[in-house]
Image (cartoon, rainbow, N blue to C red; front, side, top):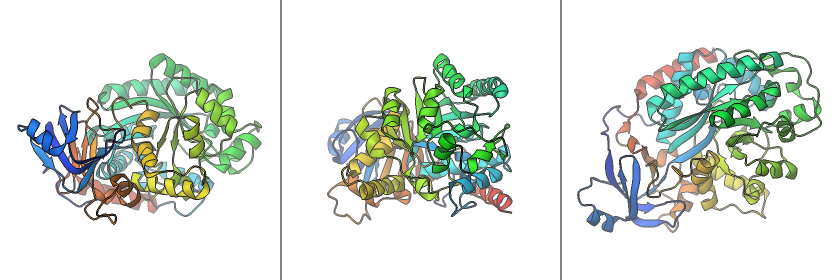
Length: 467
């Protein structure tokens, strides 16, 4: 993160943002362009000289040799685990899962809030303006609220015992209402997220979806993410067969052997009505076949693909080409900071593109496709495409600028290619969310936290968890 002073930035309610390139995503690139923002929304997009002449009274923010584009949409993360980065490293998924949960269980609510605040600041300075986050405590919700991000925050719920399902869902309902009451509904949506398939009694899935249909809240869940989960659900084998998640926390504990179902995780979830509401996001979907993809499409389930985390933990590779060709709504997610080294959506786009090009020559992913997945694709996956994900008049002013002055492709031929293949979080020089400038490289963060103090607290928490 940039080491800059806090609080120096002015609030901008309306402005004309100019740069060498405008990348609307859903429309052709505009060179030497401008975006007019008023009252938190995009009013107009066009050539800079014409816009300056048409709106001479507007304050101009010229970002120079940069690409102005919509804010990136991270469709899956766990912000409260930001300080766990690197503490459980270089191990495969099952071992990582056990160690990560053990360390997370030692975090207090304040630890989780401070950790999530650091995560939000990292995302804002890295161009992520919208995040879909899982939480069982609400700590990340408060961090998101205070830092000004846009988000869908899913309240995690899961118990392995059937007798405890009703109580678990009832407690979740209370928290969801409290979270709605305490957050800015203009930026933040509250949803519900069943825990992993091996952590829940299957009757919970139907109850969660019935609740979602009744209240209109979104649902998200991890599905078919790892070899271990696939073999556990289908064959009753792997380490997960004697490890489960129980109680009010995420601790792993011995429990009776799972009875194998003989079906894939997606079929298992379908059998228990896990996708029976109008707004369901399935995270990972690595181990799926054509039947699974067909039925995910029939249920209009969106997919969050987390290529970098899946590769880091040896989980496998999601068939992104099949999802796109089938017409599924698909976005990208960075997943748990405890598994990856950075909340970097540029790296997510780039690595995803290169890996899929390498293994599937019949579906050669372009830079434009990857940028769409990280912006408008993510917005569609979260059913927010009417508000964010592209630069269009009437949409929310969630806007970032990526510095291309040092690009290895200069002089530029294609700014989209330059962004996807050569840019990083350190190239983000400007982040606006809902019409408010939340970060610039010169002025730092405009969020409800002191960066230096947040970093100091994060280091203290890491020391405690490491020891």
